Length: 393
Image 1 (cartoon, rainbow, N blue to C red):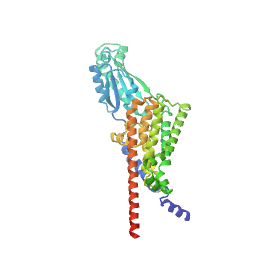
Image 2 (cartoon, rainbow, N blue to C red):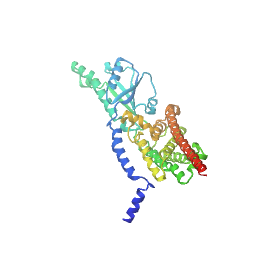
Image 3 (tube, rainbow, N blue to C red):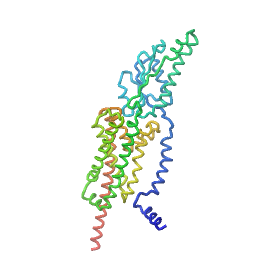
Image 4 (cartoon, rainbow, N blue to C red):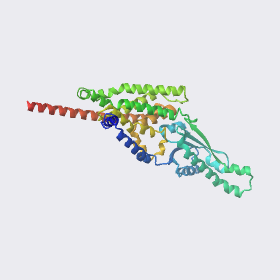
């Protein structure tokens, strides 16, 4: 009982992780927040781009039929040939559908009518309902023209089968056709666990400076850039660790790396910078590094869960697809899917890089605001103490 009393004293002292609070917060977040986040059981209105090379009345009708499905939303219609990979960058859509030239003519001549479908297979789960919907639509379209002709004409079974299979789908899986774990879950876990331990190392920085009696000197004699520069060793370690992990996945595993190395390095440096600034913000008011480390749960796991490697991004409601941009890992996963797996050039994803830089800049402004607010408070206290000392004298 003496040892139990001693441990309870430490447990409620605030010197270690506040597990009493953390355990309840975790239970509430998982049961309430993620129930709302994953309220959809399937991807509603999965985004597709249609390349309509026929541009006929029937191709327009077929596109309208696609758009009427609850599983499909035609995001864009293009009437000229285009490389399908460029349409899949930046998670623009789940698939590209090619309607060939002569689509309407072949429809009524019972000639072979092949529709090309190119799927983004980075996450296999995201295209399941989309595939089912496309097969159903094609089957219904074949019945529309096939059944009346078969019933009205005395034709043999081979001719009937040709009519009933006028339209067919020719599928192709891009970027991860073999559903490689190295190109999927393992790479996601590499970034997740690296970010998690990076947060453990940096969340307690301000609290440590207070315990070492260096915080006041940091505020009065330094500036906010002096505080941010303390993150550099941790950012470099994170970058080296992730690059080493990716090299191992490329050599030992079957990771498909088709992008630009410098773009990858820039994205990892942005991950370290944004995560480090987030750590400073969340650990700012903590008095003990151990207590600050528990704040990791507030911004690292959410980025992994909503980043697209564990679950399809489009399965969550629209409001979540706006809110999840507060997590650094969501920005990073969006970039590395394009750089590592899709082989996008820097200019192909410059918009996402710009957004990530702006996001990091906003975090830097928030850190600056807190830093100079604390400096002002400290100077005010110093002036007040000086005035009181003079009055007492």
